[in-house]
Amino acid sequence: MKAHYQKTLLDADFPMNIFFTDVTEFPPHWHEVVELVYITEGSLTIGVNNEVYTMEPGDIMLISGSDVHYFVPIPNQVNRLIVHFDMAYFEAAYPEAKNKRFTRVHLKKGQSPDGEIDVHKLLEDQLTEIINEYNEQRPAYKIVLRARLFDILSILIRNVPMKPYSSQERSRQQKRLSRLENVFRYVEENYASPITLKEIASVANFSEYYFTRFFKEATGMTFGRYLNNYRVEKAAFFLRNSDDSITEVVFKSGFGSIKTFNRVFRQIKGCSPSAYKKDNL
Image 1: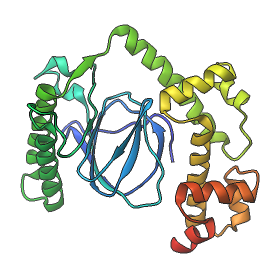
Image 2 (image 1 turned 120 degrees about the horizontal axis):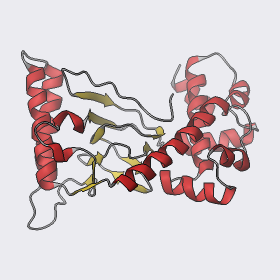
Image 3 (image 1 turned 135 degrees about the horizontal axis):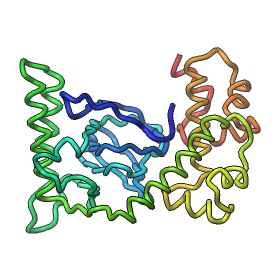
């Protein structure tokens, strides 16, 4: 599972990707496209940059390109629709859409401010149409999906405040993302071995003190929590897809003791490793 820059491939003839998923965890990552998350069942906690939001059924999250975001692991199933699209696709029709980020990101069902247009309802109607068209795939459904995407963009432009990135902000963001990608890649390659705070701070070219602040501000979680989440997801993969014993999985996923592994695994997955393995046979 990649934990760093996520390169989403958008077909030139079809300017968006659509995903239906019930995955309840995903580590901090970023990509250049806009992401809309629409919860259809269950509750989910999402971190966007240094803010954390709890989403309920019907809620919509707007994630700008280059925003670092992640799904906090939970034991319950959550169904959601994810739509990715590239703002650059609309440059010809609306050049101002490029290099902007949303300043209002969490749209809660039934909670539009008094006197304002119910942006959530407008977007939910379009997302519902996308779900129906995608599921039924009637003739010309791709044309309809493209039309719904243009409708979504017009709703966002007219009703959701956006702030342009200055060249200085863009430069700072790129530096931050570059440091984060180095950290995420290092964890991906070395998670099975002990990783000290001093070691990972040097990867980002920071002192331990500044790295601790940097990582929390960039992802909304401590590095220790991120590392535990990553290792637990690796352990869960091994439990589902190998015949390794739990003791083998403990050390293969980077935990130093069975006691620590059992405690952290239960905190994140809501069950013991043995129960998880039994339920996923």
